[in-house]
Every structure is written in C-alpha cells, then in structure tokens.
Image (tube, rainbow, N blue to C red; front, side, top):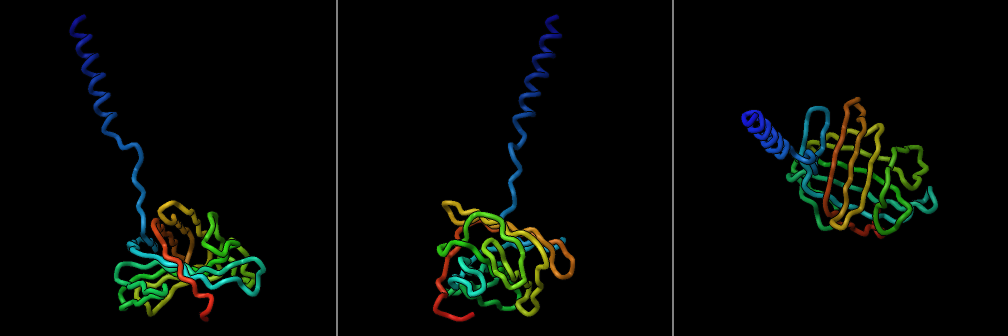
Length: 179
C-alpha cells in the first residue's frame, strides 16, 4: 500500500510540474505585413489628417502609412523609400476630426467616402510597384500607448493579405496642403 501511495504521489507531482510548463497564451506576432507566405516586419506608422471630405458630410480623411525599417518616415508623415522597403497605405474616413476611432473600416470605393470606411489601400515591397487591396477590413483600437491596427483582406492578385501594427502613431495636420 505504501508503494501505491508513493507512486500516486509521484504521478501527481509530475502532473503539476508538466502543467506548470504550459504557456497561458501564445504570444501574438505584432507589427508585420503578411502577403501570402511572405512576412515583412513593420517599424513605424503615421496618420496624415486632411480634414473633412467633400463627398460625405461629417467624415474626416486620415491617410494611414505603415513602413518597414528600410523606409524613412519624414517629419510631415511622408516617406523616403530607397527602393527596398515595404510600405502599406490606406485612405480612411472617420467621424472624428482628432484621430481614427475604434471600429472596423470596410472597403468602399464608390466615391461616397462614408465614415467607417477606406476607399484606397495598397502596399509595395520596393516603392516602384504598388498592389491594391480589392477587399478587406481594417480594424482600429485606440490604446493608452497608441493604436492596435489589424487588417485582413485580398489584393488584386487574389493573394491573402493581413497585417498588424501595435504602437504609437504620429498624426500630422495636412489640412492646408493638397494631396
């Protein structure tokens, strides 16, 4: 009987030791663009605010740009790409003039520019050839440290595209400039 208790105690200790080694939650990858099987890490982001739109009352235009480390983000939110860097671009519309608000932004390219949408989205791996998104949802969440922005969609070549950017994003006021 003593041997049985010792074996049972040993199995219980082993069970607790093994269960203690499990991760509570797999860490999610952040700050990346995945196009098919290709993954590029993103290092910076900016929002360029252009004010209210002409075609939709109550909507405000923010251009979102995300870049890899090879691309320089300039003081005005524009970029300098030496030809080997990755950029992601969205023209978004929201009903807030201060920043992108929380929510899902859907692709609407009929010229109406409603709040909660984007009408242009594209990416490039080399700054010479841009590939457009034909569908997808851009999800935005404001945090105390900046934003969490996710995208899942498809490009014009039928390739699945997704990305995540988590972190601060500088907002540049471009209301007195033209696109």
